[in-house]
Image (cartoon, rainbow, N blue to C red):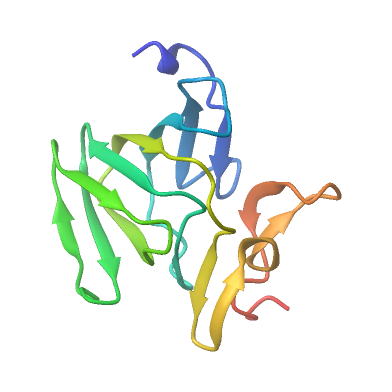
Length: 147
C-alpha cells in the first residue's frame, strides 16, 4: 500500500503506542474523505462515540468487534466486512486481530462526540485539544473521570 510508505497523518492514542493510525488517501475536503485506518488497539472504552459525517468502511485485514447500544456483546467483523454508519451511530471498536480499514466519509453534518452515562459530550470536552482547539489524539477528561 502506498500510504504505508510514509508516516501516518494522524495518531489516536499515546504517540509511543497509538490505538489507531490514520492516513489521508485523498486531500482533506468538505465533501468526502478517504482514510486508511490501522487499528492496533481497542477504541477508548470510557464511552461509545459517533462521527461528524455519514461513513462507509471496509475491513481490509484483521478482526474487529463493533460494540453498540443494541449489541453490547459486540458484532464480529472479519476481512471483507462492510459497514454503513449514520453520523449519530454510537459505537466503539475492539481489536481482536490488528488490521486495516478503508474509511470513506460524506460531508460534515454535525459535531461528533461521546455517549457518556450522563449524556452526550462534545469531543472537544472529552478528548485532549491543543491551544487552537485541534484534537491532539491523546486522552482527555472523558466523561469526567479525568476532570
